[in-house]
Image (cartoon, rainbow, N blue to C red; front, side, top):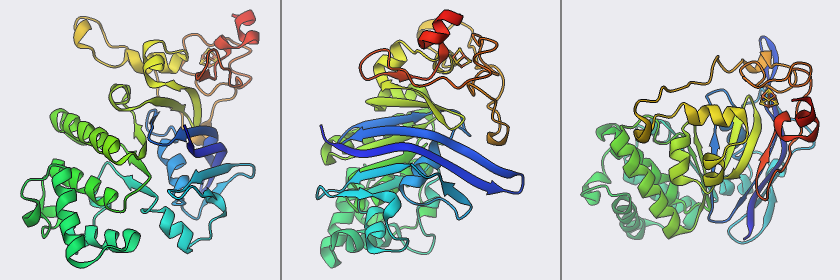
Length: 336
Ligand code: SF4
């Protein structure tokens, strides 16, 4: 399979009034064409900041540490170094939208309140695909139909505030897909929806992905959603990927105590009497990052003198899987 996206050693810092914080540390991952990577973790784990760097959407207070590399292969097969693209240049404009689309938890963030849904979709067709006029209008109707919006010809002239939450979410997906992206970044797109609508939107996204052959990065705090939609998963904690692997394997046999904790916090219909075990404590603020393993302040298996002192390196216990935990490293196994 072709690697479409490769992120190596991404570390992002922000200047704040309280000093410099580093919400993303040494993040590395790859994504193959047509696959879905789930980025999972609690809020504040660095999931959204990492993907904003891919779109070059970080604010001016952010700095990417030297040594990071983000490579993306375009639809035409050209290898692009994202960091090297000129701000405001044509290549960066083409990357945003035309190559990489993004959808958010709150669809209002994607739509302009002063233009109809159809207007905004037709603008995306014109900008990224050179399609105008009647052809653009017909394609917009087809897209709304694809995302299962009833009476699409009439909906085209509506404004986003005239639609229900679930419909607006589907219209946002149609807008993001109008530019024909190669990669779709979906940032908690179903979190604000009712469970039944959530299931419909997930099913819709999978169907569209199969049909259009695009890759997807799906950001969520919910491992249950990952089980439904992702091929691979990267679990993030306080800016670091602590476990990675094929989604089903990670969910069936998690290696990192934090991943175990996330799974034990999910209610199950098979175990209605079982008590849920939330991960104890809160995720620390990035400006109070604990020394050593960042999870040691909440981990029931932390080894004093090791976990609180030194960050475990990434180990690969089996093909395709990796974990950052002393329990899975030679040195830690001796200490346990
Ligand atoms: Fe827990 Fe130590 Fe593993 Fe961190 S390295 S998750 S503290 S056992």
